[in-house]
Length: 249
Image 1 (cartoon, rainbow, N blue to C red):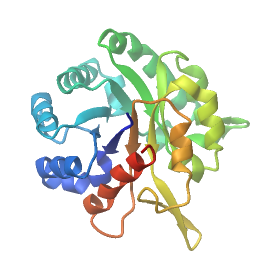
Image 2 (image 1 turned 90 degrees about the vertical axis):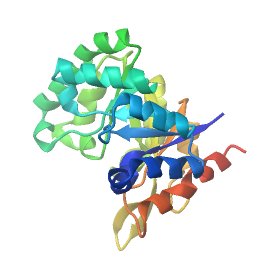
Image 3 (image 1 turned 60 degrees about the vertical axis):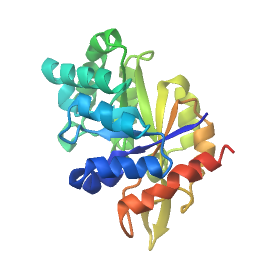
């Protein structure tokens, strides 16, 4: 069965205002789980109850890069993950001062060094990209090249965001085929172009072959995300759960 989750960054304002009501609304909209972007001020036990009460599961956590530089911070996310039943920890973003050859090498090294502790805890580690990773940092080399080639080929995974690969003019099908089992999560968000500018859209409202991308990977979860809205974000993301599920009926 295909399980569909929402990356909660999509509804960050609603989560800040009333996380309990927001999670309930997502469950009622047909989502099977949520992917966290932080803990929203709640403990692991509070999250466990909130998810259980709404029949939802954790489909990954976006944790800060600083967790790879601090044993205590990483221990927090390990313990938090165990409490809520999460199995994937994902680095979601790289600040601009890291986007150099040395910065990407440092990132790869930090990810590799964290593997032993995470593996012992039954967790997997991944990286979520945007478009800047595909920009040249040296002649013939991008930040993505460094991350893909210098991280552990067996135990460091990727969360491919198909909007950002297409935005960066990367051949998404080829990337997914090359990475194969290293893709442990995928972000689905549609794209529309207005007056020469690209922006995200609700699933099915844009021009990307999202089902084709989803069919290319073997993942437990399909993660919906949206960053641009015409109205209330919570209302706009609700239909996407059933649109994705409808692909497989």
